[in-house]
Each structure stands twice: as C-alpha cells, then as structure tokens.
Length: 270
Image 1 (cartoon, rainbow, N blue to C red):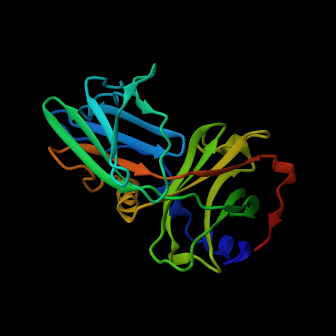
Image 2 (cartoon, rainbow, N blue to C red):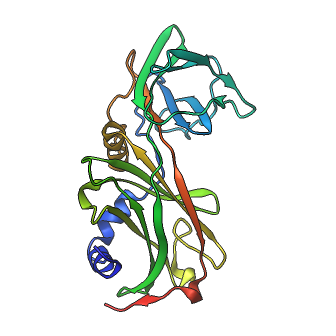
C-alpha cells in the first residue's frame, strides 16, 4: 500500500485511530492496591519500574517502589543477575539483552513472587518516516507515515510503534504483519492541524518540534496486552503468582527522527 492509498484510507478512519492513540494508562478499580510492574529489556540493559494502583477517585501515584527483590535470568545461558535501584527508584542493570535468548523476570515483594518469561527480539530496520498534509473538511492535517522491514518468511510478527514529540510520548500503537506489503509494514497516524490555534495541546506540533519514530518487535502476547490497553482494559495477565498488572518486554528498538517544518511538508490532494 503506497502513501496515496494510505492517506485515502486514513481519511475514512480518523475516529477509529483517534480512539487508539493515547498514552498507556491502567484502568484501576477500587480494590486493595495491586503491584504494577513495567519491565523493558533492550541491548542497553534492563529497566523495571514498580508502582502500585491507586483508587480511581485519586490522582495516579507514580511513586517508584523500592521494597522488592528483582532478578533477571537468561534461560539460555543459565545465568541470573539481581537488579539494583537507581536515583529514580527504577530497578536497573546494564547487561545487554541478547537477541534470540529467553529471559525470566522475577519480582519478590510483600511475600509474593511474580514471574514472567519472554524472548528477546532483534531489531528491524526503519525504511522511511515522513509527513504529508491532507485536506480535511475542517483544515489541513499532517499525516505521519513510517515504514519498516518485516521478515516475509514468518507470519504473525508483531510490533510496538511509538511516536515521540520532543522526547515525550506523543502517539503509540500496536501493529502486526497482516498488512505488510513487499516486506514492509506501514504505520500512519494523524498529527497536528495546520491552524495550530485550533488544535488541542495533546496533538499540536510547532515549527522545529522533533518527532522520533520508534519500532520495537514484540511477542503476540505483548501485542494483545497493548491492544487491550488501547481499549481501556488492563490487558491479559503477563505474570504468574498473585494478581498484578504490567508487562515484561524484551526487544531491540529502532528509531529515526524528523523535524517538523510545516512549510516544507508536501500536500496530498484527494
């Protein structure tokens, strides 16, 4: 599918995409606080954030909890490391994740043990990242399109795609290879209106803003988890043991950045 086809298709599903583009949030309910584990293993090492749920009527508590014992085991090498907390309260270790290896994360807290296993994915290659103006009834809107390589010899490959604005999360989504064409997967999303005075703060882009497109290959389980989050659900349980929320992902993210210059973006006329 080329850019013209994508934009024509995109203009018909604005409402659908808008409903899926949000920062990750957990649908907490008024019960005893649950442990929330968010763990990311990459070639740069591992970072694990541990928090607790809060009652829905209260502001979300992002205070990092440091009363746990967190270990990461490389099941292929037969080794394990104990993570240490950093100045932000995250549990970290700089040992690189190895593509193709399987890992187990264990979190012991309050007498409970939560465990999850996953495989480490290798990086894919981003082929392109661009913006095009598209005329909508209310204004012109900048459509972002990013393309990246997909292994056509395998089926069911899944990805977590994120778009950052000046280093902070802007848009995100889960995607798989069902729409791949000639070994390429395409992600596209609406961004800012040309008339910035009429745009919401969460979507507006200004001249000079830096957009960073990041692609992380993930498991089907992680894809399902992200899909649930985008539909305002906590998602399937990814840890064994007593109930907790969160995920454990091992991937090699790839990123490219472009600078938003509205006067230099080409227009696509339907």
